[in-house]
Amino acid sequence: MRVSKQAGNGMTRRGVLQGAALGGAGVAAASLVLAPTASAAGTSSGFVFPGVDVVIDGSHATTDVTLLVRKYLARKSEADPDGTMTFFSRNPVTYIDAVLGWSWYDWDSLRTALGQFMPNWPKDGKSYPTRILGNSTGAMVFFTDTAGLFGSSEIRAVGVINFSDRKITRQIDYWDGRHFGISDTAKLRVPADTFPADFRESTVGETAAHTMKNVSYKLARALRGGDGASAADLFAPGAVFEDIPAHVQIVGPRSIGSYLAGAASLLPYAGGSTAVRHVVGSAVGGGYEWTATDGPVPRGVIALELDGWGKITRLTAMWDGSQVDDSTLVSLSQTAIER
Image (cartoon, rainbow, N blue to C red; front, top):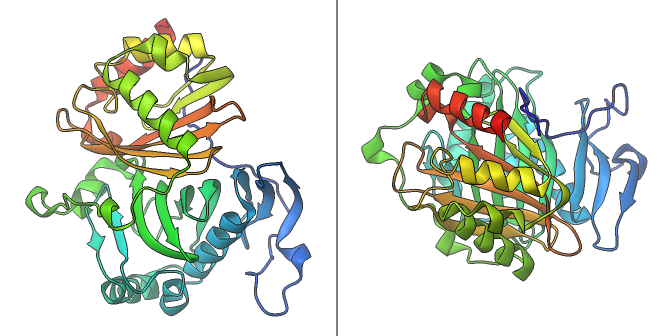
């Protein structure tokens, strides 16, 4: 068990294919991949993002969704509104920033917003993926917006993305406002009375694999009841639990279960009022969005990696840490140390 200052969510390798261009006409396959590996589940890893020293972790994503997300964010990184919008469905489409409350519910309004944002981005600005979990129906996408895209600090987010016919129909972004800056986040957040209440999950339906839905609901039920023992049973030997806003990382089912039981009153996704909003992903990678009616943090996301037996090998929690006070984060870290 250990407490870490920052949970990493990507693999880096310096000097490898930094100049690789976006896959398109005339681009050789060798510029898209670096020693990709595949499993029986059809997952792959080793795809390099163009212009960034990062190898995308696609070990729990299908190859098609890894390449689709890579192309989507590469076009976004080019600050190309029209090119970016080719990845979105014409109707319906939903895009919500779950921290700021910025929301768009149709193709035209999202295109207008990108046309306002992108001309002001720095030339070296990037929006790049580091880890992808899921398949071409839905995925959890860990990505970074570099400083200058939406403020003076970078944003490390988890995007919950639903697809239909290789087009994005719904994207909800979750990130930690403390990492971005508490005051900067507060300045950008819409007023509480205009914050969206409906995240439009009903428009896309539940397409996640049965295994992912089953594990997600069992985990949410155990967390809601503060049942550390039942939660521990869902984790594989050597599993990793990481809560990014809390800066906590714990290894092993026994320690994870003990921590979840001890921290139940502090974790925003473990209260009695929490509920599963939406599940995405395949049988090996995905997770769920959650809501909470009590406590300071009303929403967040749990990303899950599963093994072939349906056991959790890695859990990553993302929520807005700017909505809790310092003492809560200190108590979460202290609980991890004591367990």
